Length: 258
Image (tube, rainbow, N blue to C red; front, side, top):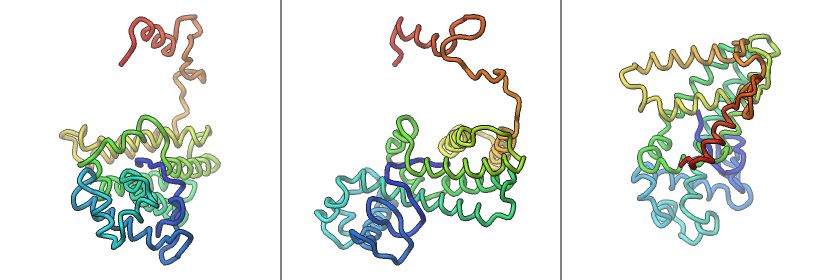
């Protein structure tokens, strides 16, 4: 659903304000948000035109009608600037999803939540900036998959936790930790956004989307816990045998895993 970025929390789509926050269109905040928006627009245009690796601060400055030194005073390097472009793009998608959820008369119903998730997944999958980054420098996305939770990923967890918590209170979703449910849903849909085309093979897109809907309807409503409420103990099971965590520990002591 989302590939995160490190820029601070995004509030709503519009121009980019101080420290990466987003302000409504037409506002002018400290540090020249309108100027920043022009630079981000120029960086986006360059990304779409030539890809990440061939975009330069010099080219962005030319497109924005400013100097390269002005850009360096605001962004330390190109990756920081591209990261903020990503934050603005992803933040706009998530904010649109939040607004849709607020207007949905089915508030508290799982059907509405699933519809909004699937629509947001599709918005990410077809977003031109996301597609271009995936094509030209997919490694930029790796830290948000393996190392840390980005700002937009946090936005999605917060949004889903609120929706799933309300649905639990309405009785359409099982009781449980809403954030834990939200994180698992994000893990699933994020993988779908990234890998559906590569792994989908001969499965038609409509069929894949239908299976995603089935999964999203089933997981938050299934009460059965195959572990009997114990989860997966990383140390041992009731019989005293080493659990998965201990097994991996023993293997790594015999020979380090790459």
